[in-house]
Image (cartoon, rainbow, N blue to C red; front, side, top):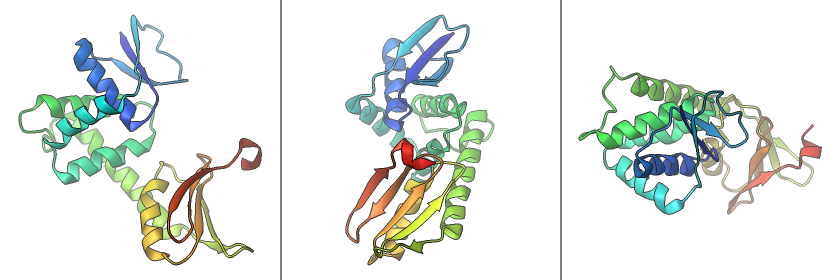
Length: 198
């Protein structure tokens, strides 16, 4: 069994695809740094995220997918479901190998899984937009706190910036320990020290 270990970023996933083609060795398992390796790993390759490599892979992928499918890929990656990494890896490799792309081949299980995960993550993003409530703090900044199932806060920020462009606010994902602060002009990603999260 061949296992690739990567940093859990989208760029890291794309770099893993580059490495697989370069090495002519494709993983059976894709594991994020810090996770336990599968018991029967014959070969382990540590993927070092490289922007140049990931850009080459992304350019190859986006030439073969529609805008909707590209959005489905980036959105579904936010699911953070452990077993999903290898599914998306296979989907992207099949896209590269296919002369016309595979996004409409609904007989392919990886296509179905990407579509399902896209719908789940997108649905969770809409739920956050509907149910996020902002409360005004003493300094006039508005604060919203949620614990979404999937990592959808990056998708929600632009909506709140458009809607509340003249206000400063902080949207915080309690489950993941980070949020986004908008000062009326710029959005900044913020994290809370572990000692303050509980």
